[in-house]
Image (cartoon, rainbow, N blue to C red; front, side, top):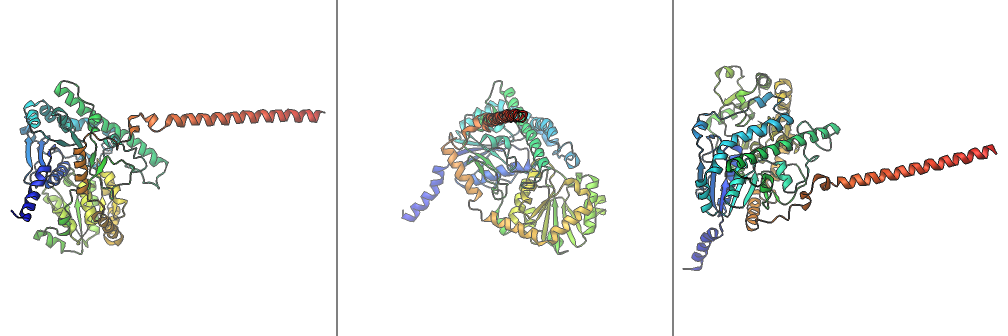
Length: 536
C-alpha cells in the first residue's frame, strides 16, 4: 500500500474512531422546532458522529419526512397508544391569536398557556417515561451524550432515567428562565417587550411595560417547566430532579440566536448561539429554478410582494376586517403583483380579489425570496422566516401574531430593512397601503436589508462550526461549569446588592439627617445670641 492510499484510509477511518454515539431527542409537536433539531442532527452526523434521532409524537405532524438528509442517521419513532386519535385530529391552528387582545395578555398567558401546552405533552410523555422496554433499549446503546429541546422537557428526564449526560437546546432565540440558569443577567432594557419602544427612545411607561411583561413572562415559563416536572413525577411514581437543576447540569446551552441579527445583550460563554444553521447558503446563492407558474406571475409586473403567515396561523382564518384591509391595499397598488400563501381553495374569496393577487396553498418560499423580482416579504415574524429573509437581504414587513414573533419582528426591524407592523393595523387599508408602497419604492429598505445579509454571510464564526466546536467541547468536559457566574446561586437581594444599596441609602439619609439637626441647632443658637445682642 502506497502512502496516498494509506492516507485516504486514515481519512476514512479517522471520523469513525473519533465519532461519538449521540442521541438526539426530537419531540414532534411544532414544525419549526422539528426542522431546527433535524438540521442540527444532519450537521452533527456530517461531522462524523454516530447519530440516533428519537422522535416521540405529541401530534401527528405530517410534513416532517425528508427534513433529515444524512442517510447514516438512525431513527426511532415513538408512536404512543393514542396515535390513531392524533391521526384523526386535525392539526391545531390558533385562529384566536389573530385578533384576541386577551390571548396576547401576559397575565392570561402566564396562567393559561403553560397549562394548555403541558397538557399537549402529557399523554405521550407519561407513556414514554413508564415504558421500561424503550428506556432499557436506549440505555443498552450506551450513548455518550443526549441532546434535547427544552421547550418540551421530557427528553431531559429521559436522559436522567437512562443515565446519559444531556445538552439542552432551544429552537428559538432565547428562553429567559434557562438563559438565566446559565448566567445571563436580566435582559430588561436590552430587548423591547411588546408595546415598548427600544432604548434609547423608551420612556418611563415603556420601562414599566417591560417590567410588567417580563415578570409575568417568567412566571409563565416557570409554570410550563413545573407542570412538566409534575407530569414526570406522577408518571414515574417518585421524585425527580428539579427541572431547572436538571437543565443547568450541562456545560453549555445551545440557542437559535445569531449575535449579528439578535439584540446585543449581556451574556456568558455557556450560552452558545448557532442561529443560521438552518440556512442553506448554497441554495441562496444558487436557488432552485422556480416552477413555470411562478415565472409567469413574476413577469406580470415590475414588483412582486410575497405574503405568508406561516404554518401555525392560517391566512384563511384571518378575521374579515383584516382581509378587507388587505383587499383595499391590493386594489390601491395595481402596479404590484401579490403572491399570498392562502391554505384553502376559496372560490368566493378569490372573486373579491383584484387580478394582481394570486392565492397559493403552498409557495417555494426560499426560491422566491432569492429572486430579485420579489421586492418585499410580508411575514408573521416566525424565526425560520426571519432568518430566511435576513440571509436573502430582502425587505420585510413583519406582522407578529403571537409567541416570540413580536421580539423577532423588532430584532429584524432594528437593522433598518424591515418594519414591525401591528397586526390590528391590517384592518387599516390606507395605512397598510402607505407602508407597503413605501417599502417597495424606497431603496433604503433594500439597501439596509442587503447590508445585514452581507454581515451574516461574512460573520467571523460560522454558526455550524460554532455548534460543533462547543458540542465537542461539552462532550469532552461534561461537568465543566466555570463559565456560569457563581453569583447566580444567590438570591435576588444579594445578586443585585440590594441589601448593600439599602444600607448605604440609610447611611446617607442618616448622615443628611444629622447634618440637618446640627445645622438647625447652630441656627437656633445663633438666633438666641442675636436676640441677646439686640436686648443689650
